[in-house]
Image (cartoon, rainbow, N blue to C red; front, side, top):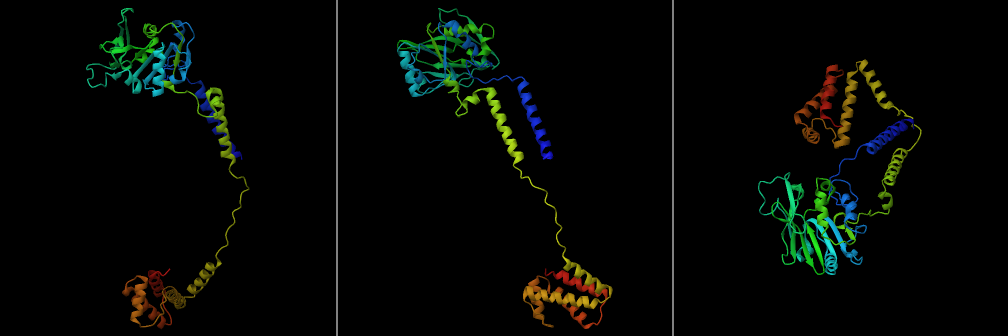
Length: 392
């Protein structure tokens, strides 16, 4: 247990050190494009959410509902910021019905697809990747966006070109007008009349993020763009960029709060460590029992030494020969017949050795049987020849 406790303390100290480092180290800058009114990172839209109250009389309404879900909410001004905008058929029909009855929609997105784009005859492109790419342009260049409406000062605003390279290459010119153009004379913001209301479309949504509202006078670009909307309450839905933004688990309340979330994770980790170290079965040390020695081998060794010291080499050879013959009988069913050449051939075939090698062995066996005494060298030669046959 003391040995386990040492490892547990080391592991707990490591976990505690990691948690302290994570808590007190500065958070890295997050460049994720979220367009969220709660996000203070460069590509969030926290500042827009904070200043909407200066442009519109009532407090803005933020939600993560679809347009279809908002259609019965008496929406007067609708704001959507997203990377791409391709609403479902029901959402498109709900949006056009709302605008047709007098509502206004402001949608800023780099790409427009699907039924919505088809209905408005809208095509959005990226001039870095279109069929006729603009030459001699760097992504680090400065792009300039200019309002061309005579009722607004024709002031130009600067943005990084790699964040404002989308434009409208085609739209319904009979019901639409250009409001903002870039320095390549391409439309980046248009207004489409639809029934009693208007749809304002912008292809540079990153201009509405914190990163650009803090740069020079670009906050004026946002205020001028949104000033086209009437002085009515504005509803901002983030569904088309962030989705529902809710945890799909019964623990959603715990996971939605950072302190509760960390407490939950630490509790799970602690339980896992407890199971890991306590799952090992506790029992007393099992003593090592020395197995019984094989006394038969000791007996054989003793008898062999006895014969060897008495110089009775023939007796040892005779026993060695008898044991070898017994192996031939039990393993190969071969019974020795002296002088039988075919028997020797069977032994060679069964054991897989050359016939000459087998003959040499049995000639030595016959010679030893005829001698009353043999030398130590003859015994060693017999033993070697038998071992070479290797019947084990």
